[in-house]
Amino acid sequence: MHDDHATAPAVAPEQGGGAAEELAYRLRQQQLTAEFGHFALRTHDTAALLQEATRVCAIGLHSEYCKAMEYLPNEQQFIVRAGVGWKPGVVGHARAGADTGSPAGYAFQTGEPVISNHLKAETRFRTPKILIEHGVKRAINVLIQGEGERFGVLEVDSPTEGRFTNADLAFMQGFANLLGVAIERQQVEEALRASETLLEQALAHKEVLTREISHRVKNSLTIVAGLLSMQSRMSDNPDLTRALADAQTRVQTIASVHDRLWRNDEVHTVNLAEFMGELCEQLRSSAGPKQRLTGDFTPVTIATDQAVPLGLLINELVTNALKYAYPDRAGDVHISIRPDEAGHLRLTVCDQGAGLPPDFDAARSKSLGMKLIASLGRQLGGRPEWQSADPGTRFVLDFFPQHTSAAGA
Image 1 (cartoon, helix red, strand yellow):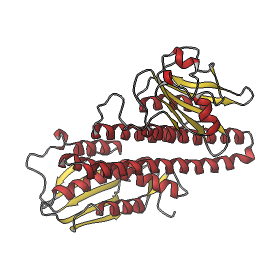
Image 2 (spheres, one colour):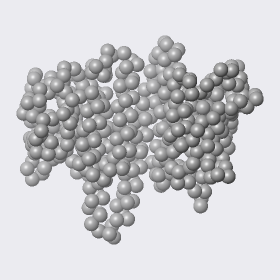
Image 3 (tube, one colour):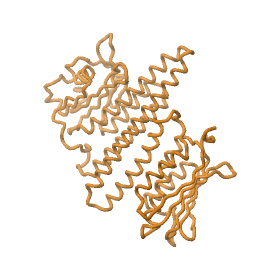
């Protein structure tokens, strides 16, 4: 990797460098990567894909400019296919040299990313005219490539003083890898669409690449969970430690969904009983030695889009129960998801602990966990209900399953 002293601590451009701010900055980058992965699965328009990539990448690095350049073999130069922040006439028209004398050309020809934090003092490469005209002071260039031919270069440029770091580079390279796979998927689809006999192969290839993207998202989320765990262990603030531990569990829940996606043939649905069984095993690791978590789940499949909020909701409910229902850290929590006569699935989470406070009002609670529970319940299309179990507390949510069928049918 070519880098002019890009080894300073990874700090968001507008932040002061605190651990919490840095962590939030990196978490935001991972969130943007995951969201772009889902967008890439839905779109079949390469131009829209490239434009969204430049928009999101600029947000992720707090930069004004970003562009995606495609290599033109016949002309042996780049053309700016998409971008944000540039003057009229740049996107779709501007050309740039693709030789190793330019940062973008070097990244494309060698496959090595390039960080240039001081373009005015740059001695390794010439500064492209377009960057001079826009007052760009620093830039990152990374290769866009799937499994086959190189497509071009993704470049983020900033007109402000500061430093792009290796952590920023990791975000950019991961983002460009997703983009490369998505572009390749679209190119394969376009080539196969012309032949009706090859359409089935195109769909199969799409499924493979879908799982690959889910696998990469899952790996990114696992890295985030690891960072949260590391930050938690380093913190001397009990409140921050608890908050980071809660965030780690939430990230791991989302990662487990993507893990099932890339390991299974079916990427659009999740087996509810298997998914919940794995989630319960994960949650048991946070329970005390005298706490027991049990479950009863109907054998159906649900849409993957439902599995994520459902998993997060159960994570919040069980975590709250383990923390607050039993002050002595001894007792049972039971989860049930069963069908009712109306065709809904009924989620029940109950304990036999201390029960609800006398003045409990979920709608007025300022707790992040309670707000998240209410939001996830609405996302599932249900109405959360808190009940007194005498003894203990019971949470009930009826929701309509999306695209479900009996397992094994």
